[in-house]
Length: 154
Ligand code: ZN
Image (cartoon, rainbow, N blue to C red; front, side, top):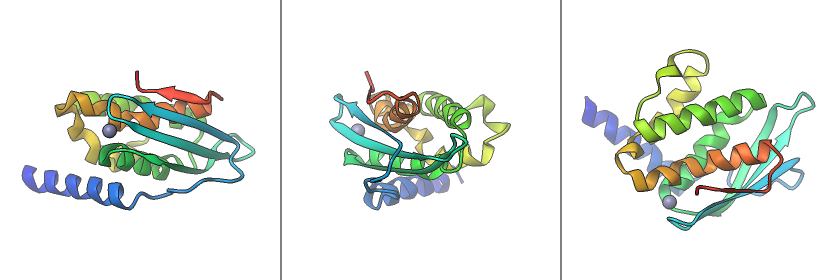
């Protein structure tokens, strides 16, 4: 069972790495931020379109990076659409926990469904040098929401 799950997670990462969702420039973006992970050479530009109430109406990204960083950005943009800034920050915080430890004690509460979709990346905690690849998109999301232009994994 565990191996099946591992294979499934692997498949999700490869699929999103090869065919990233929301991989485009948003011409009418309200916010954008650049993310840089010099450790691996991952770079991305994130675009957000905000609704009048401040929630995320649309999210898209462009850039170049390893399969993990691309898959993470792809899953992130899918997951945060329709979320308030507060929910997006909460997801970023929980995802960081998930990527670093492989578990997320708070994930059983609200946003559980969203965290479930991000589970395929939980395996990176076994590879400390890849954690930054997985969290780069989320650092960049936080930066964009806070109105900053740059985010670094450092
Ligand atoms: Zn990387």
